[in-house]
Image (spheres, protein in one colour):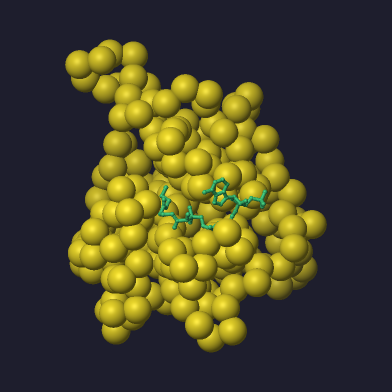
Length: 242
Ligand SMILES: CC(C)(COP(=O)(O)OP(=O)(O)OC[C@H]1O[C@@H](n2cnc3c(N)ncnc32)[C@H](O)[C@@H]1OP(=O)(O)O)[C@@H](O)C(=O)NCCC(=O)NCCS
């Protein structure tokens, strides 16, 4: 049960300040709000031009169940962040059944290295260029990590170009840590936030073993995986009277 990886240290999120932004699902009707943010040099350099948010929405409907670098995508979320009902940022999170990264041992052909077998959220974000440096990026990432539907995600990761200092500082401020000191095969630096497993306190009398397996499988593990590898499942299983 569990895993060991010297590069990953669990972050205790219980003491983090509550985010100052509120998230709501991002939809096609929000495109006119965010598209002008992509005229900004930094945004277009690191993410793309005005078509980026629209393409992201189109892809969102198609990616579930697809494989990226050996990991299966199990969820796709994107949110508009509001401060006092005013849109201030956009954040995307693709959920995968595990984390993998390019090993980069071979310059001509990247190898894929499998990292901890944990439900993983891959994060991308942008804040309104006129409102940068006000703590909104950090707050938006924290709000995403706290989003209830992402509670099964144990590991959050973000890949950043080494010269994107604003993004790196933003991730550090949100509690992420550098995963490796050197960029990968694609020249990206990865930052990760590993959080503690959620502890469920469910009276054994109200829980049947069968119910829990079905719930856990359908929500996070997928039919093909062995539910007994899931640390939380084992914890709750031990509470079930035999
Ligand atoms: C990265 C980005 C989201 C940061 O948003 P933001 O709202 O300005 O970030 P915050 O105000 O929350 O800043 C968080 C931390 O980063 C630091 N920071 C932000 N911009 C910085 C900059 N240009 N240089 C150095 N540090 C910076 C802040 O000082 C703060 O650190 P602190 O909490 O220790 O004071 C924003 O710059 C952006 O949208 N960039 C373009 C898109 C992009 O690069 N997305 C990421 C792709 S990986």
